[in-house]
Length: 289
Image 1 (cartoon, rainbow, N blue to C red):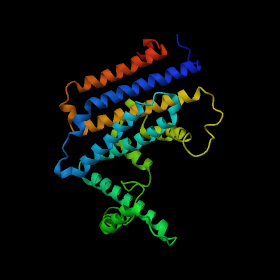
Image 2 (image 1 turned 90 degrees about the vertical axis):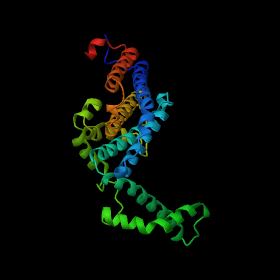
Image 3 (image 1 turned 135 degrees about the vertical axis):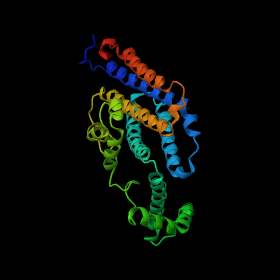
Image 4 (image 1 turned 30 degrees about the vertical axis):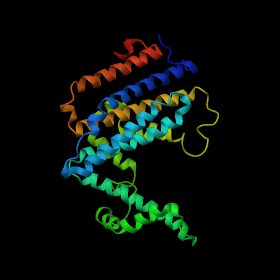
């Protein structure tokens, strides 16, 4: 029998290793379908939407690529940073997926340019307010303002009442968009994360953020067993969000109808995940039944 109160460093490291192997399984799944996803040609009527979906999924793939190379629990901060990014990307993909028009993709596309304008203006303003010449290294930003500002301001008027919103959707924060994504995805999220995105954000996400904000209140004097446990939970969430997002993209592009054995692959992924926990933690198979 497994002692659920066994929090030895060896046991905690094994827990982290099981979740690292799960993440590798998800990475292998993404790697297998990378060419199918990236070779999709955006439909003319939905070009911005499809390009944004492909771009967001590419970010997921590159996060998995990076995490696959971080094989020690000393990397727990990197795992957490990836976790935060993957949650945001998952929400964005969900919003794009539920909007079958080009509207959301158009907003995301122009929000990126509006954000770039905002950053460029802040750079230039830093020097002009001090009556200093803007260094040549920022010539590109000055040219961007000169060439694109007028059009971007017109788009801001059209989409966001003249303001640059915190989120491309126009909502005030990530949570507002997350609630919308939850309503659309429903049980698909719960099946993978074991909870809704809303519950995840209000619980585990908040705890995770304690470990990355400036200061040491949630870092100082932690027992050494804490770091593999943190790593394990971060890695699991990264893998869960990545597989959820990959399924969204595959289904959005209707690749699931053409990929042979797609459903069987998802089932096999779940079985392989189970085996990784059995192997690393010596958990009796009966506990999964």
